[in-house]
Image (cartoon, rainbow over all chains, first blue to last red; front, side, top):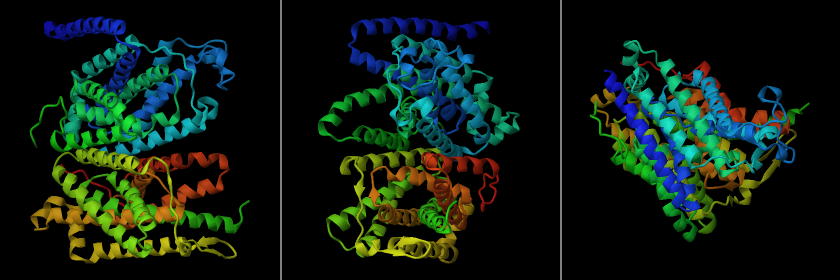
Length: 328
Length: 299
């Protein structure tokens, strides 16, 4: 028994080491544009893997992931924004409980705080909304996203409104991103292969049957929602410190849709699917980008994404990495 | 603080927006009642309808009356295509597959429009007889306002009669009640669903024209929030109930306009936030909506 327990963990250690050697080699050899793409792939993978926890394993089709990314991005930005620039950007200094006005936070605690705040938001919004059946949840979470975007536009003292915040310090690099991706995958993997994960999948497959067997759905739904939101918040923080500028409309429906497409194309409810989806769709995006700009057909990439989504849903609904399940 | 005239004027604005939501909600609630599908692509039909009228009426010079009938036909055709190409294949599968596909179709149509008409909004110029201004002691209105209200009432009434009285309308209600039993009773489910899509889409495309004529501006992304808000109207009124969808539409239109009009202008940016806050509030206190029947979970 103890043997079985250790072996997968060993694979994670070995895989992690290999990953970081590969990253080191990539970091030394690739040009900055390619590294930029590799980092974006990592950030999107974190968002997609965390979305998979709710949408894939628990069967709650949430469309509000961008809202949690926005919360994480704005929180970590406000905590780390350099003191010297705060006055000219009209951003407030930190209050005393966060370390007082003459300090800013280092990157890692700020990132984690962003994740925690996103998780708290998920807890508050999830408690009422998760009682609803699947498709109501989709619209309610979409509504939550609109509400968050509205606040990002209107709370000008904190977010500078539609202008957005720029000159955010560049902290995110390839190692931070993939360290967090590694942590996300490990946590999701551990959850899925535990009692919690089995309960979540039981709820997905048949909520009433799961209830009959003594699973209290609300607890597991809320847990998967909150953990997914935490990692989405972290992904948002990484994104903010990578692009160095955030504006409210970046975290709108377009972002959610991209993540959903990555998940569905890769394979809902699989371990490797979200990562495969995020990597392949971003590769596709950067392969099509010159074409779109050359032909001046703006919207072409999104069109291809939507077409891919429809094609996958009609002919291979389990995604690239999914296994076909028997029809019930 | 506010004069009666101002209040009445804003109520009129709310009612007109409510008419638009109610018309969209009609199509959505019928489809949702049968298939449990939140049809995001319904919103895209508004965009398509508005641009269809724009191009054939203002560019090709078809008279407006003719283009109104053409847009109804065009919407019906789009509904038929969407149903036959996509949704029919997915029936019987997981409900969420339909939702994802309709989302895909929405984004597809939106970006298709973005590519062919450019991301800039277009000015939607209606003929002068629709823009004639009338002033009374309290309120000012245009012909288009009257046109929207009257045509909405006619459509809602006709739709209501159709669903209550006609044979296929009765079949539609039976299918919404229980799809399998209706099938066993010899109702052609596919035909019923196709009719529901065709009617809903035709009304949605027509609503696109109303939107353009009322607000004077159309753009490739006008359908998304409007479509989602129409679903909010469906939920507020009670899912699957046609009078509920109308009531929900009017309530939502008023709830969107009146806070905007009565609160200080700094709250104007919260407009969309207010609508979705209402949605979440309704979902918490009464998930079955105002006129809906509580859904029972069958094992």
